[in-house]
Length: 108
Image (tube, rainbow, N blue to C red):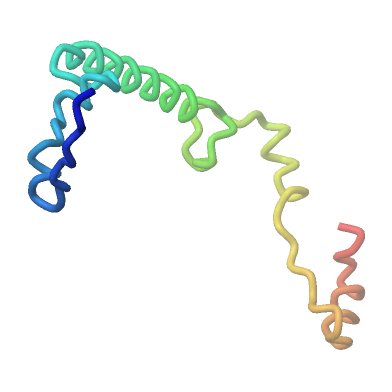
């Protein structure tokens, strides 16, 4: 039986030289021969996200409410005041609460 020799410990620059990045990338599916595949995947994702973005922008529930592509019907324009944000007074402010109730803002 042959005795095993102790190997020199590799540290610093020696470890970096022995590490083959291309071999590692090839093993995880990112080698040079996989370039075309990942390019196609990137194109597909770009097209998919573009289509979803256009559909989201076209949709009437878009946060760009001032720029929807569908005109609002007459009934919705007439009832728009019901959906406006109301300012409620701070609960501890008695004077503001009295003014708020006198204005009839609780009932709408």
